[in-house]
Length: 216
Image 1 (cartoon, rainbow, N blue to C red):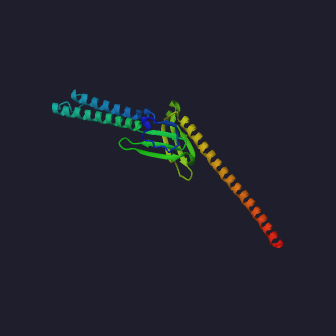
Image 2: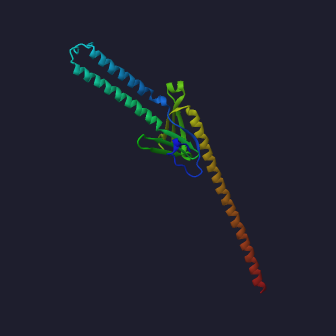
Image 3: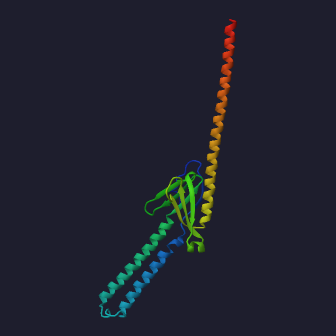
């Protein structure tokens, strides 16, 4: 197991068949918004310093320092937002094994959610307009008896690959269940045959004993 998956605790014999994480481009909106706010803050600070804002051209130097300080704080807050969004992506992992689907999230503490492939009832692939253009999307997983989505594998590049791998494991789990039922049914049939043989032998022995009593 790679260092990236040290958080994953597998059962004996359980094997990883696919792993991934959300695409980094999911933070593009946060980056763009932060860049716009930063440019506006520094643009406003420059305008105030140059006296280009009506009514503020008489501000003293100390007031200019306050304006620039506010602009710097806004810039730092946006950098922090972008860094936090990036870390959230880097600390989110998706893993599919031959038994379960796992999702790990959390920067300072980890939360691991898992769903058994033998419980998967339905999978739904969703793409918006941008997702169709750039081939990314979200796969929602529902289990039998649930009223909605149990697990969402979000913002995947090439989500069809994950969905296909998952469906392969679901089919394998279904086939394994059918084999178990067939084996149980076969074992039950053998038990019935053994009981019939024992009863037949018991009747034969009883008949022999009765004949021996008659001749005695």
